[in-house]
Length: 362
Image 1 (cartoon, rainbow, N blue to C red):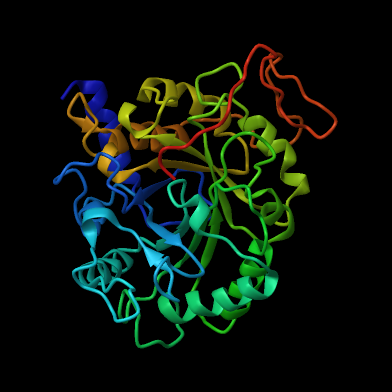
Image 2 (spheres, one colour):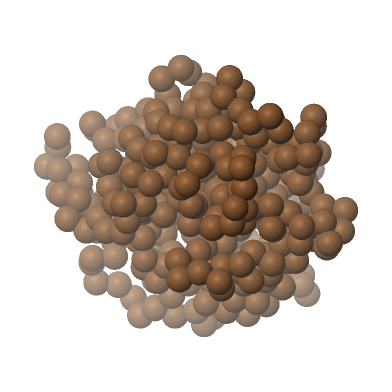
């Protein structure tokens, strides 16, 4: 390896540790959709926990809820990791290997969350009312938390929380879902997390309400497939920081969520060197929590100088936090002069643009 690469990798390996919500150098990886779409591009879950390259893994997705298309149970989709050849009578997948790997990763100090939504099933998920959302919170607790059910997809394994990757612009019920889940979490000594994965235009049309009304631990903001992508004049991490004052959780952590390879997004992938430059600009914010990548199948097959994309980005992320930095502050974020902000602090794209945000991943 080149000397510079070796030094960066060594720094990362020395600093790798279990997930700390208050840290500023966390690496979160989305797993389960095999967006690379080859037979070998997505390995089993434990593969990504073994090297301790990541601090948390988010399994994707519960793609249809509260009910599946052909049953009264939600639909799970984990691509090649678990299929319908093993399922319960109600149609729920029975994923014994994933169950084993959840426990394996947790024993290494790596929490595992389960994500709801995604772009592909946008018309197949959502709630008609707050009551329906409250009922589904109990379903989630019984199927994946510490509740009881005869049809638990991960058996005795208990996940560490839920992620909301809602992209259908229907916000009905999600604040109720979160509050009900929090009520179940309070009955346990176990630490649970709830995250949201909005797209970068602010406010997000699918998750704006839940961020303002609910206790969300961290937001994994997608800076690709949009005009506000990383590496553009309209990159708006600063704007998200500025609007934390409007959120229910004033201590929420914000993550830079990136496409992990060119084929992981329709557009918006950038090299690790651009990521490093961006981290220099935003990591001093006290609300900055780290980087999250879509997705595992892309990140681990995207190689440069002998390192996969997780290692490339993580090395910069960890070394950035070890080097002297500016005082951490939330006040007066510097927003590019290329932004046009209206009275609600919403970025207005260039007038010549007819841009419509899209998503190929989540």
